[in-house]
Length: 372
Image (cartoon, rainbow, N blue to C red):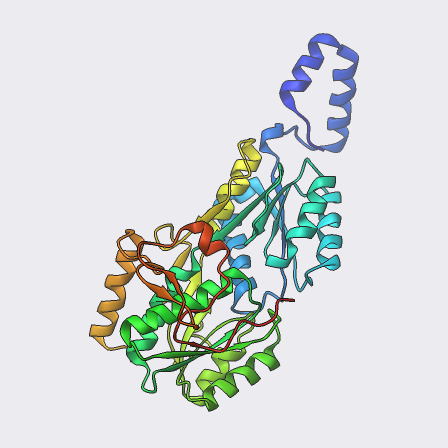
């Protein structure tokens, strides 16, 4: 049983009987009184796929574990995995809020509307939604500048590909995924102006069999490098099996594709999650949208494969530093879409335009899938 010691002392001054009764209860329980600010914050995570050993959900769970290491006894966490977007996610978040969790991380794009509904009914709970575009008094959105790493991966693919064709397996056509395809293509074309990126849409985040099937089709179309925005490890496994090069995504996939992976664009959430939990616990949390990138350490490139030539590795690292310093922007200069329409004549694309990106750049083969 936890008690608030300052409150107990005030009670002693105003009501001796109340204090005596509390002391008796504590004596019987054998539990020492603890200050309210020593209580751990209860934090829950909702995941769209199984945690697994690599991938989107795995990285969020690594962030959760890192948060536990950083905050120690100040935090208590739980997670629910493999939760479908839609009614299931609302049910899970509502249940977590009812159980007394004070902070809930909703880590998939399709959780936004359910999270907003639950947040309205539980104003005392704080919600953080991954990739969203709406906030509420008790719901914030956060994201990462994934396209920074995607541009670098594309540049490496352009330098390493023999066919000049890369295959890209994509989940849903939301702006974040479209950004990734475009940044990867622009990076690849910065290294090889004639390069092509062939896209296959899944319209799901996690389906190992479909991911593998899509990647096989892209290999048959001449792709000797693969990348993806999907949730399983099927594509890294296939790349290793078929001897094609992999530009991994989300996690370092070198333990799955030690020969195939050139590098991987990894997501690192621990520091961010620890800060949010600390802010909620201290009462200083506010719904301020967040987007971290290479400079913040939220996006990192995995160690390069030994097969990457030293000059290529040097070029990629130079550009990595330039992006982190703001000297190189993935979406800068003249940008033309697949139809030849000039989408940007010069300058750097603003965040508002990035957040609504709904076109594919010149060099991408394949259209944008129908939205679910």
